[in-house]
Image 1: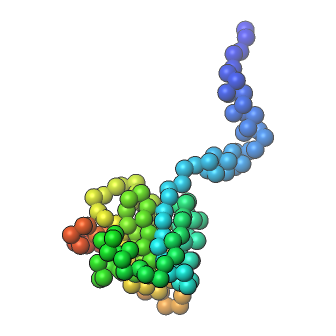
Image 2: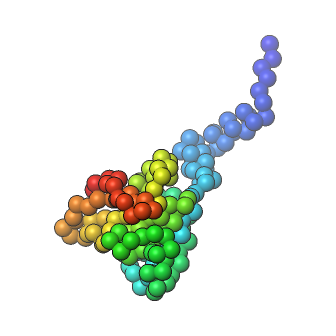
Image 3: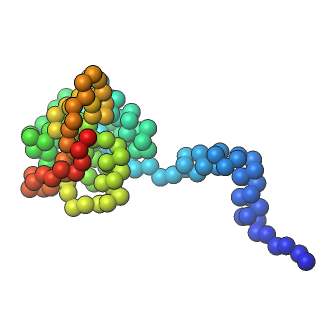
Length: 155
């Protein structure tokens, strides 16, 4: 009896043996598609830099656009003053305003609700990039083109 095995199966088995399962998983993850994100921020803002680093670590391909003139960007992306924070990001057509946790952005992109985006208004101690003593509870709000908000998550 002759056993027939495809070339693809032989190569896959060889890769698993050569790399081990964890090495193969890292190799496959490294080649995974990353969601592009553009972040508009002030060049001197350290908390924005921390948030950008967190987004990169969570799998986003981040491009930073430094500017000292944020109000026109917020108007362009329909971020009302009451919803504003220090930086504005765009990911897959959604607006991400302020220190929104990465896992909630991933959830937004997976669920694809009919909203303009998510925001954490202001600069809340304890939100991603704003770590520090005495973290405060905060809400992540979803907002639509009319400016209506709903609570997307509580942290």
